[in-house]
Amino acid sequence: MNTIVLIAIVLSAIFYICLGLYYRKGVINLSDIIPVIKGRKAKVNGEDEFSSSTVATSISLATVIIAFFELIPISGLWLFWAVITTALGFWLFSVLSRRIWTKLSFYDHRPSIHEYISTEFNSKTVGVIASVSTALGYLCMFAVELIVSSQFISNFIDIPVWIIITIIAILSFTYTGLGGFRVVVVSDRIQMWSIWLLLVSLLLFFSIHIYLNGGISFLSQSVPENVQSLKWSTNLIPFVLGLLIMNLFTYITNMALWQRVSGTHEEKVFTRGIRKSIFQSALSWGLFVVIAILAYTVAKPSVNSKFLVTTLEAVYQFRGGGVVLFFVSLGLFGAMLSTASTQLIAVSHTIYEDIISKYRKKGLIERIESSKELTLSRVILVVSALGAIGIVQLLNLIGFSVADLAFSIYGAALSLAPPILISLFVNKNILIQLKYWITLSIIFGFLSAWFAAFYGVYILKEPYGNLVFLSPVFGLFVSAFFTLTGYFLKKDV
Image (cartoon, rainbow, N blue to C red):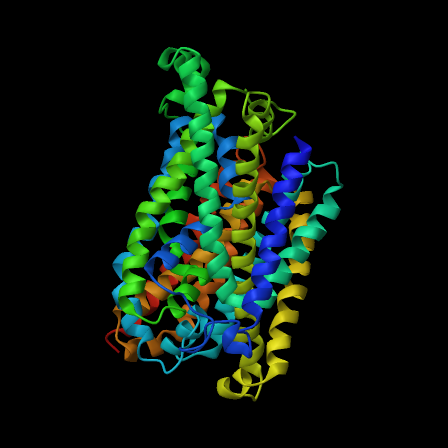
């Protein structure tokens, strides 16, 4: 079993390094690493590439696949709520897609989400604060993905976790740094194929296994009653409400998705691509819930082992289980690298272009043509990611679980949603008058989300620690309060 997993990971690692080396040939300057102007290598080719790469980055090994297997015994069919709300999040972004494209078309280059906010409200401070918020979030999520995924892999490979973390980090840095945004998009699409392969192989295995053991009656007896039902309890309120707010608005504030918009050169590619993402996300996320339920036919959750680990160990014992495990390993490793590389290129873009460059004298065109700036962007990518690992390890010591971190980080990022939404619908003359209110909305929205998280995890603890699930609610509504207050005070002035 260990050999199969190791072979799958080694083959994947070699392939992605070769992919990075191949796309490095076209990387000459900064605009080939990050999408800042049209006509360079940092781009998205076609609606299928847009949708596949977008959905692949949403399927995290740590916060989706592993989390689904851990949550299924508790939430049962309520886990489909995550599927529905994620699809709704992509749908909301698609509804806004034409307005977003129209706004961005007025720029002579491809602005990041933070530069867009800064320009619309005519405030460098707003842009920098928004950038810091995003950078912290992406750095933490990269570290979560790296640490949790490495701990998961260590169950199958007899190598210390810290060595696995180091190897995967170097792999992520290398192929992302070599090929930049273009190799991230291309590899995301390939990684989405590997995720589909994972889903198909497990569905076929479970279907055959269930058929050979009595069909529907065997399935019904194997899956616990609470997992088969939609039993409601008041304890679900924070989870259901927090998940709705987080998944519905998170893509509006998602730097990685805005990068893909910036890398798209035709409106129809963007609008059609995001619509395809709705269907792909619903199908792929939904199948992961189905697989987590079907896993009960071969294994049972244990307090001493993660349910996904127990399931794969059980699958391996059956005839043909080794082949299934190989395909599953490719998909799991692909899901991890897709999320990690996307977060790396997004945070590198944010820190370099939206924070550091705002306090330098060099203009965009001058920086684009400089090889030193290309090197600087790569150094930022590596240094910032290493720092993030230390931050997440500290949060783990305090008591934050993977789910806690996901709700906290994405909840804090929602402080950007009200400013972005109002910028799409309100006249720019009014927006300029709101810059101080927008600054307050981002700061207090960010802080309130983390306050809810720390208060729930560190102060209240169990059984009231689920206040952390309301972090997205705090982040969004506190930000919306300041944004709307400023708007109603200034609109008639």
